[in-house]
Image (cartoon, rainbow, N blue to C red; front, side):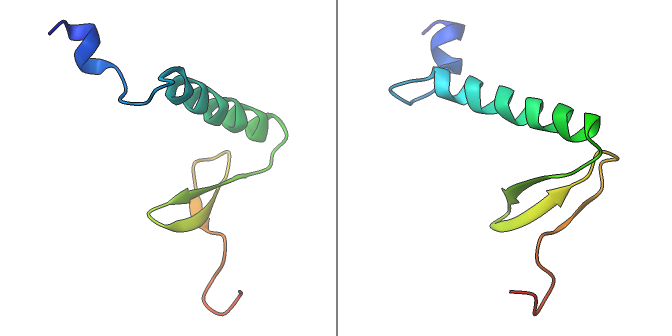
Length: 64
C-alpha cells in the first residue's frame, strides 16, 4: 500500500476533511482581525476561543 493510500480518509468524499480544517483556520483569522472569538465543540462541550489563545466554556455551570 502506498503512503498516499495510508493517509487518505475513509470518507467517500475525502476532500471534506481538508475543507473543514481550512474553514476553522479561516474562522480563527477572522476572529483575530475582528477581535472576537470563535465557538466550537471540544471534548463534548461548547467552548469559546479568543484571539489570544484563551479557551473557556461557552456556558458556565447553571447558565443553560
